[in-house]
Image 1 (tube, helix red, strand yellow):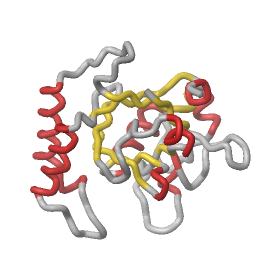
Image 2: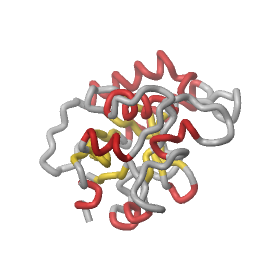
Image 3: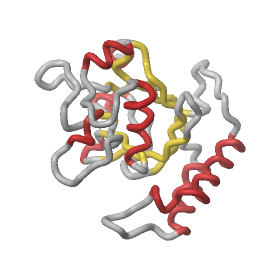
Length: 196
C-alpha cells in the first residue's frame, strides 16, 4: 500500500488554493466545484515503482462507502490521480470525508480538524494482511453497470468528442483483466510521512 499527501510542502505546509483539493478553483476554464486531484510526489514513483498503473491507464478506486471511481494517473511526470468524471473523487474527498461545502476552499486546518492529511491506496489482492471485502465477480458486475449507465458521461476526449462504446469497453476490460482495482481511504495523521 502507499500513502499520498493531501497537502503541499512547497512554501510551507498548506493546501494550495488552485491545485490538489482546490483544483476546482484553478484559473482557465470553468470547473465543477468537486474537481480535484490527488498529488503523487516523485518520491512515491522512486520508492514504489509500478505500484500504480502507467499514466493514462484507467483503474478503479473503491471508497470506504463502496463507490467505484474510474480513475487514472495524469499530468506530466505522472504526478496526480484524477477520477473520470473529474468530480467523483472530489465529491468523495471534499463533501463526504472533509465535509466542506461547494465553493469553499479546502485548507490545512480542514485536514487537522479531521485528523487526516493523506489517503491510503491499497491494491486489491495485495498480500499485506488487509482483508478484501469484494469478490472479483462483484467488482466486474459493478464495472459493467457503470459501463451501461454512465459510460459517455465519464469518457469525454477533447471538447465534445466521445469515445466509442468499443473503446470504453476495452478500457473496462483492461481494468478487469489486469485486476486494476484499488481501495482508497482517508489515512491517519502522518501516514504519508511514516511510510518512508
